[in-house]
Length: 191
Image 1 (cartoon, rainbow, N blue to C red):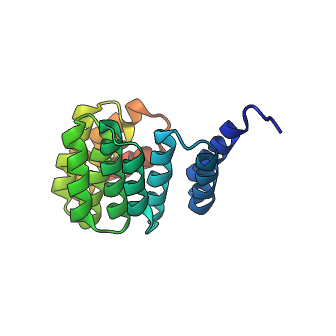
Image 2: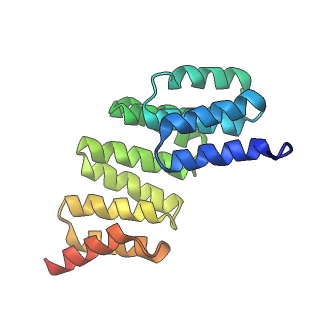
């Protein structure tokens, strides 16, 4: 009913759906917003990233469309990351890592690219490579609790108890409560 701010509500609605992993509703809401305000590259990138997380096969075509509309260095970095997310979602880990490495090449401090790359190594079962990647993440962004958590989880999977506990404790330092880290520490201390 707010004729001057209704666009904002569409965006909030889309973000809420995305946060709840209700991807079809989030995608529809972002598209509705874009149909009325087609000049905001960040919203286009958010739409494409949501599609990538959902494994939507139209993701790569949307990425191409975004590049045609907004050919800037920032857009390029975002699109490389989104392609990496998409391929991770599809379990095409080697291709995902190529795109994520390209993201990092263009923006060394793009912490989410390290996180996604670490996920790909972890999901593929290469825990040493995951540890290396998560170590790079916490070097670039030392206050990322999720980076410390996944570093701990990778050490934990390799049964490197002390390193896992230290990493989980760092996760708790930057995010408290962090239930998964707390449970892991308690479990490891009982062993």
